[in-house]
Length: 381
Image: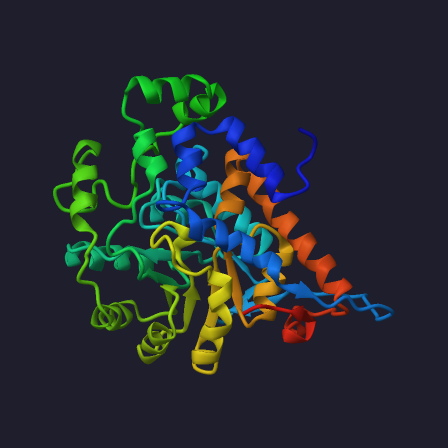
């Protein structure tokens, strides 16, 4: 393929290079995948105002997210197993994000550890926290994020139990891959991915192995994670985490006005409107359809950010116009990473930025901060 022009181009390239179990992990939803599809499809229902004969020079996408300067209102979302899309994936993506001037958010369930990412970056990255039953481990994990100078803590609230993702079960997903006929065939058809993986030692969950109690090797890890996600997680735990962390706090996974108001009551700096990319409650509404309701509920009390279904710069601009102070891209950067490594992540960011910039200009605006409902022609939400 010639130079990729769209996120869809990167997706096609990634599918060719990444073993099926890991490509499908990034590119799937729960159960029927209805919410996963709605996240993308509902963006097309929002129509923009075309404006003409206005000054389109000196345009700027620069803004801030929770007080941090960003080159555009986009952060790389926390995604598990990023280092299985490409060897050392989290480290490569973090470097690309830093160079582009946008935040990178490292997942608890990353392949590269907090310390690995810190070793290749010079500016603060963000850390996403899954709350486990082992509170001592959580305290140590937060302490490690503080020691690494992370600029914000993103607490995921919508994964107390794991939604069923049929593709992962059928593919026998594991990190590293278990040696079966199915996985052997998948790996044999992706030789360049395998060659890259052979050159790194990072193939398991770097934030957990050697750090969590009684998890010293990969054989005990899967059982530990299955047992450790805490179904009792409550708003009281969020307050405990906020006090322990002491820095910028973002709560991810809010899709209801009552939960939005509860999030604001904790004193968190921002919430992320998200349905976990359609990977948890299948049948939930799309993230973009719920964004205006969240802004109306708490937009005057905290920043409202957005996650779910973004596949273009136009999607980012639509979310901003509906009130999001920042957005997150997960699959777009994963496709870029899987396709081309670090240059692919940069390409994904360039595509998003260029599409947003051109669309903003054609809507008659020069500054992203001036883009609100004034650029929306019609919206069903």
